[in-house]
Length: 136
Image (cartoon, rainbow, N blue to C red; front, side, top):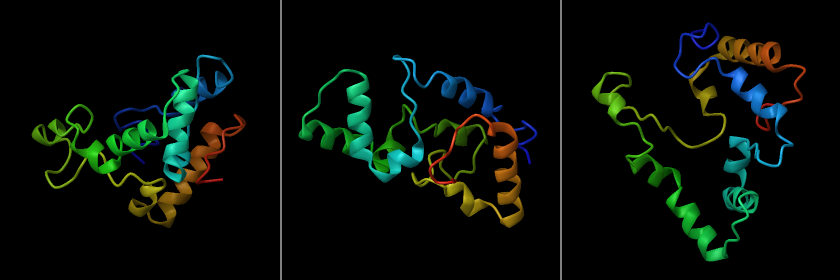
C-alpha cells in the first residue's frame, strides 16, 4: 500500500515507465525488461552492446556477465547502497540488491497484496501496451 500511495522512495513509478515506453522506438532508446535479462543474460548483454554499436567477442560477453553477476554486483560498493544500513534505511541483515531474479516481489506478498499490485498495474499501465514478460 505504501507503494500505491507513493510513500516509498523512487515513486511514482509508472510515470517513468510510460515516458520511456512511449519513446521505445526512438533510435536513442533501448527498453529492456528485467525479466528478459534474467532469462538470457548473455543475450541481453549482446543486445545492449549492439544498441551502443560496440561489438563484443564471446570472451568479452562472458567476462561482462561474470562482472555483472548478482553475487559480484552485490559486492560492488558503487551500486550496492550498503550505506543505507548505516542510516537505518534497511535492516543490517538485509541487502538493497536482493536475489537477482524476476518476480521476487511475489515472495513478500500474500494473495491479497498480489491482487492489489496487479490491479494497480492494470489501472496505471493499462492501455499503454506494456506487457511485463513475467506477469502477462
